[in-house]
Image (cartoon, rainbow, N blue to C red; front, side, top):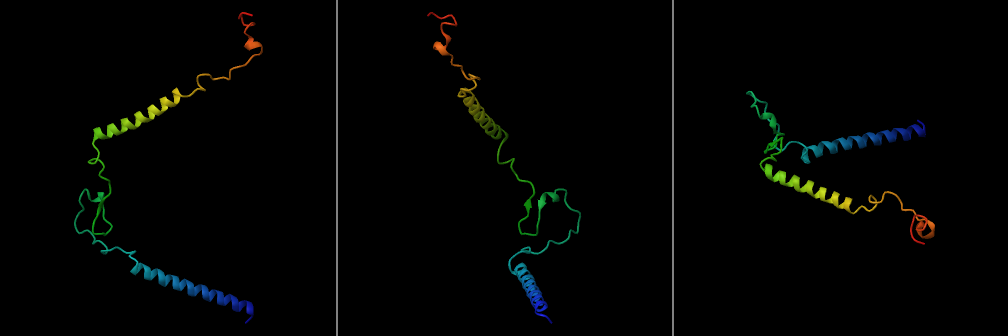
Length: 127
């Protein structure tokens, strides 16, 4: 056996050992690290499901969660309307303030400066 093939076989052996160690580590972490469900799998349904069963997220944990958030009871429609109006009013106020303070829009061109006192006599002013 040549030295080159010996080093290649050693490299493959080390690679296989590392892969085996990683798979053992992954298996141990699945068991000990809590990657599985805490209470086991849910039993298969033995009766027809309820109409609203699809709205519950049951992943096998002790506390199933609703799929949809209950936002409606937290904020009433008038309170939501007040928040929306306040937000839109604030941004409208900022927009009008920016428009009022915009000096460039009042004079959209650069004022020209003419010689001879800005052509005062030439434009009909007194000499």
